[in-house]
Amino acid sequence: MRQHIRLGATAALATGLLLASAPAHATPGGPGVTAKTLVPTVTVDGKDYTVREITIPPGQGTGWHFHDGVLHARVAQGTLSHFDAGCESDGVWSKGDFLTEPSGSDHVHIGQNRGDTDVVLQVLYILPHGAPFSQDAPNPGCDFE
Image (cartoon, rainbow, N blue to C red; front, side, top):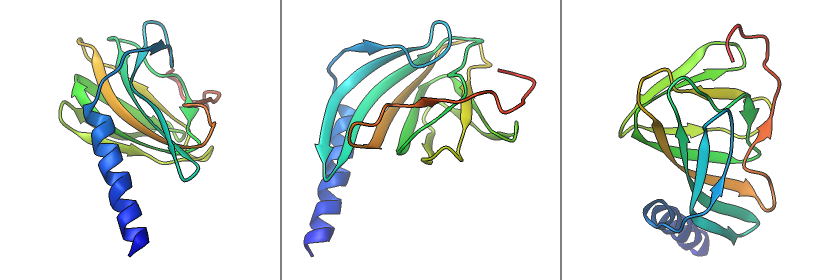
């Protein structure tokens, strides 16, 4: 029963994180790509929960990377094109869509804005305590960056 309550509290925390707002800035990827912290990191049971807003201008991308934890994102604006390390599209998401990025170096990927308006993502990061938001990775041999 206690575990069920803990999971419920985590879900409530995640929902609250996606709805709250408190600004700060960092740069996660290519030229013009910005990140704004919407909710500062909260640590629960050894996991860091942070909500950030990522903006990707037209023609730009996140760069190849992976995460040490799971990410859940909502597309607030634009269309995100997402590619895996096999150089294949693993999804195209538009305004209102939700996506999940799994953890680990075996899940190298890149997100790109191939449209003509900014892509804005609201992202819940669930990472091991102290882990970076992402880890850079080399282009796995794809003919695009």
